[in-house]
Length: 236
Figure 1 (cartoon, one colour):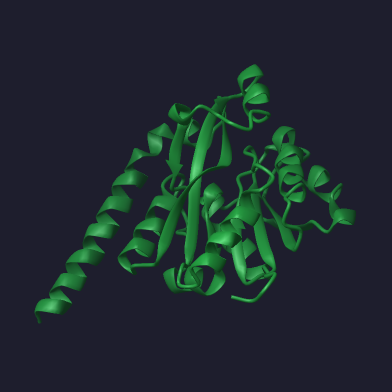
Figure 2 (cartoon, helix red, strand yellow):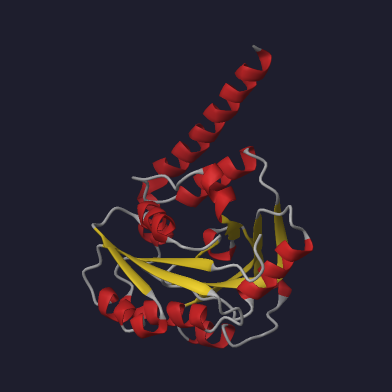
C-alpha cells in the first residue's frame, strides 16, 4: 500500500438530514486528513442534499441516485471513489477522530492485512448518545466486536475481489458481503479500539424492516449454496 494513501469514505443517506451533518463532521475531524469524502443520496425527499452540499467547500462530494437501497448506494460510492482504501459510514452514526489513523497503522504493521475492523458502541439517541460520544474510555462491557461496514477499513483491490454489495435487499446486505469475504479468506484483524458509535433510534433500518426477515434467510441460503458448490468442485 502507498505511503499516506488516499482513503475514500462513502456515506449513503436516505432521509437522515437530522443526523447527516454530524456524521460528515466526524469524518472531517479525523486525525488522518488525506480523505476523499463521498455522500451518496439514495433518493432522499428531505433536506439531506442541502446538508451534504453545505460541505462542498470542505471537499465533500455529493452524488444522487433514485431510491434503490443502501447496497446500491454504497456500490455507487465505490464506483466514484478515488482512493486506494475504502471506508463506509452510515448517515446516522459517528466515528471517533482517530479511527482511520489507527487502522492505517495496523496496515503498516502487517502489509498482508486486507481489512481492519474494531469495536462498536451502541447508544440510544438523546442524552445517552450525547454523553457516549464524548466518553473517551467507554466501559468495555458496552462494546461489541464491530463486524459491520461502519468499523471496516479495506484495501480497494480486496473489496473488488469480493465484489459489490447485493442489490434489492432491505437488510442483511453487509452480512452477505462479509460472508463472501470470509469465504475468499481475506486477511482481517479486529482491533480493541472503539471505531463506531451506532445510533439506536426508531427509524433504524434494522428496526423498521423487521418484516424483511426473509432477506436474512436469503443471506444464509446464498452462503450455503456457495459453500456446497465449492465442495462439489473439490470432490469432482
